[in-house]
Amino acid sequence: MDRETALARIEDSRGAGCVPCALARSPRPLARSAHAVAVLARFPVRWGHVLVVLSEHHESLEATPLDAWLDAASLAHAAARALERVLAPSRSYIASLGTSEPDLPMTFPHVHLHVIPVEERGARPADVFTWKDGVLEASAAEWTALEEALLAAWP
Image (cartoon, rainbow, N blue to C red; front, top):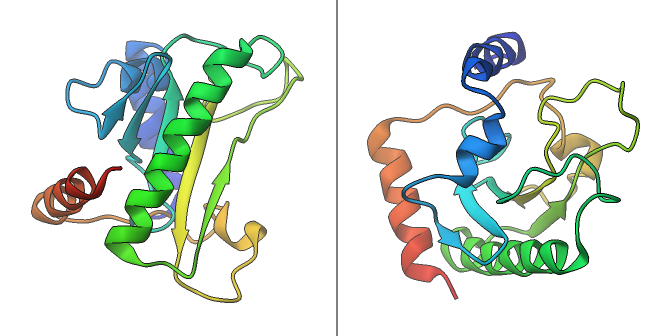
């Protein structure tokens, strides 16, 4: 799906409020901890892209309690381990993208982490953390199979 279509779908879903807050209430996450939840990304840049979303709404790292951040980081580590077991990527990127500038537009102004498996050996972070080439789409059966594999491999 191209970038513009994905962004339009995100905008359409904003009517229900903060999208990451809704993800944090997911009835069937990959994993849930005291302060965060891990889910498959709805608009992934790579197959297996996992989001780790804080359960409480925080818009900056400054506002995020350290115990919540460490808990989310631990969940991201577990997600990367499961992805390595299932997909055997060349590497895994874990990143939190955000801003401390209140007026800087963000797709999701809610602290979250991306766990992205990367197959290409030479891929650089700027190649991975971009929607310039759009996002992946898959069938319901493909999503279910990936989810089941990750759940079975979760440490």
